[in-house]
Picture 1: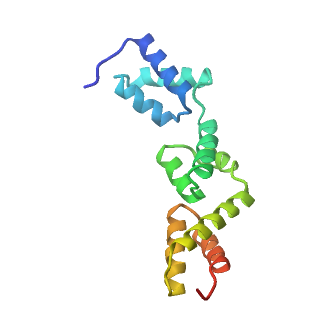
Picture 2: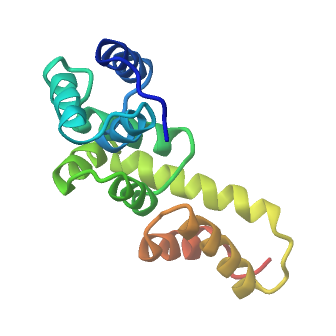
Length: 158
C-alpha cells in the first residue's frame, strides 16, 4: 500500500506534476493514487487543479495531438485511440484534432510512404505496396487515404 503524504504536500507535488508537463485527468488520478489519495479527496484536488488552470483536458488534447503528429508522425486513428484510452471526451478529442492541418497531414502521409518505398527492394509491386500501406496504417492513418496515396506514389513497375 502506498505511503500517505500530508494534504499540503500532496497538493504541492501534484501542482508540480501538472506544471512540468500537460496532464489529463486520468494521469493525475493515477498519480494521486500512487500518493495514497483516493475518493472525494482526490476529486477535490482535481477540481482545484482545474480551477487554478493546472489541469485542462482540451489543452492537453491539443498539445498531445500536436506532439504525436509532428514528432512521432502518428495518424489520426492512432491519436484518437490513445486519447480515448486516457478517458478524454469526444469533444476534447475533436478539439485536439483541429490542430492538424489537412494539407500537412497529407504531406506527412506522402513523406512516410516515399521514405518506406526506398527501404523495400521487393520485386513484386503488390507485395511492396501492401508492406508500405501496412506500415502507414499501423501508424494510424486512414486505410482509404493510405491506399489512394500508395497507388499514386508507388509506380506499377519497379
